[in-house]
Picture 1 (spheres, helix red, strand yellow):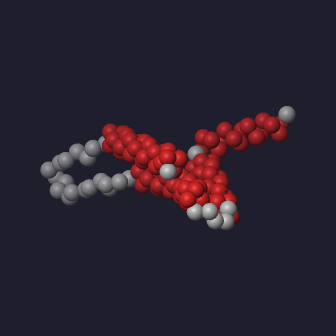
Picture 2 (picture 1 turned 135 degrees about the vertical axis):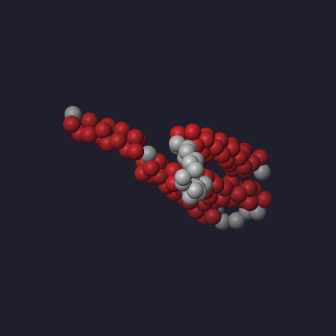
Picture 3 (picture 1 turned 90 degrees about the vertical axis):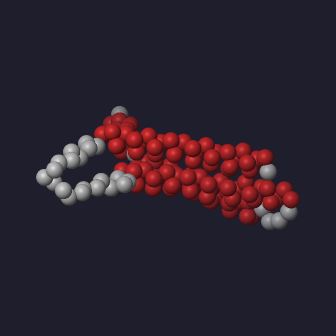
Length: 133
């Protein structure tokens, strides 16, 4: 139980807290950068800005994906270890959950390369340097 709490619950809480802080920082910085509409007497049409911008929605999607991959990948492994401690059964379930955790880690890594333009460019340049020599 201690291993499950320290390996799944505590990192999930830390991840959630950090993601909320990142989102609030991005939201406040985008509000500072966006110019405020100047109210005028001639323009009586009330133009409202969107509550959440596309950038913020994209960030939320990314955070939810990363969080779900972490929780969905590692929680079953530690739950299986916990269950195996009390009830002995086939180890194939543990091996299957381990494969799922490794696949989630692979998806997180692939997502990093797909979504991070600077990392993609850096990797391409390094690979080109290797083949030029």
